[in-house]
Image (cartoon, rainbow, N blue to C red; front, side, top):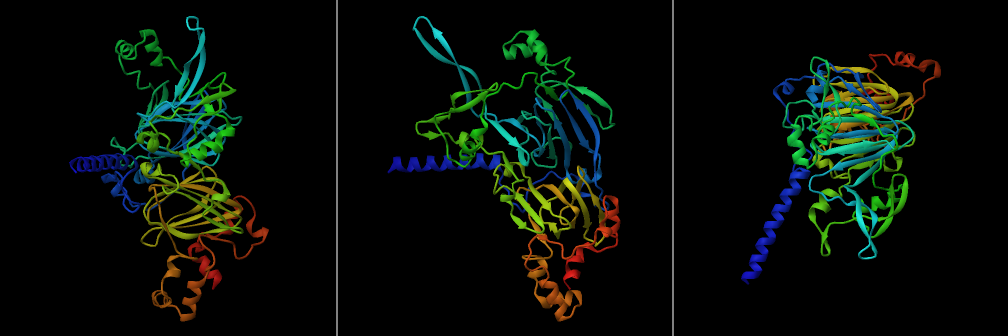
Length: 520
């Protein structure tokens, strides 16, 4: 009996410790209350006037370019967000680095491979070479290289980057790789000042002071004494000085002359990798690529007996990306209006750690996204294609933004502010980054909306309507959810192209009530 009680107590203790570890990594907050480091200056923000932003400065590297959206913008500072647009040329390597804030990356063009280096995780990717021992008259396999998991990504993927975790990106495609990255600097993971800091493990890079003066910055090894660094690494001082990259002028994106020589699964193994992500672990031989050549190898799984260790199962093999461009994954679809794809922690659990989520929206010609507000998050939209009109209204019923958005522009939509978006004749596409792992919205009109869920008599009294008007208001767009197809087509002469189209929509046109008025 004593032995049984002791075993039970030990089991409970281990369960509590394991739960604590998981909670620390994934976060223990629900979608309604997520801790974000909001400072006093942020609490004073009113978002009285919003504006669409474009990249304000550019840093050129050897094999790519980084475009910065204005960090001094009051609206971005208030929301605690920082935005980058990065282009990596073919055979370009974005040097290993980590940041003080978590981020989401959306791949708008191209493909490549990346590494995300979790501390304590085993180097499960191994390649071997044959070594012949004359004394034993036999060949023995010795490690050629070993490293942590390599992840493939492609256009439409959202990639999660935890704070403080080293990562690198490489373009192994034939076209430039373009990615938009949004950092949540107000996240509780950032305990430094409320701005993004990047720590490079290699190379040197250009940075900007608050006075917008460009300066050359080194990597984290360049600050150590050469002798102490050489002793710590067990190398000579000449190699230690080379690691400090004192005369490296290539920037943060460098060109790999003969291509990157890393061990990674062949593209034919993508489906098999997805099976592993879902828990269907594969053991044994498979095809690998190294330096452009294919060969048979193995992926080592750390285990004790028949049981895999908890760290490997929960962190080291964690899925870090998901594609949101695939139409088959849409959460809302209207054949005449477009589609909406939502990515949250229920679909990608690592977002519990990032405390961010994303939404992909594709609107067809002249379609309308139902007026709504974000219940528990700020939202930053980045336009990927077409153009459209957006209106945002604050709690006083005042319009804080009313304008056209075009490709590569970003716009902040504050929490609880009402917004309506309408596509042009050319359509309208964007991706929204939200500051909650399970961001929720409340729709104003359409199926499962606020208006439709209110009793008709409450609507009648609230808006001073007749009974018939209240019924028509409540049942307008009753069969459509989230995406509204255009109710009528305007003539080509009314639309025109380019700036003429914005003239066809008068600025005093009440878009937020248009869905109701047209149906009435």
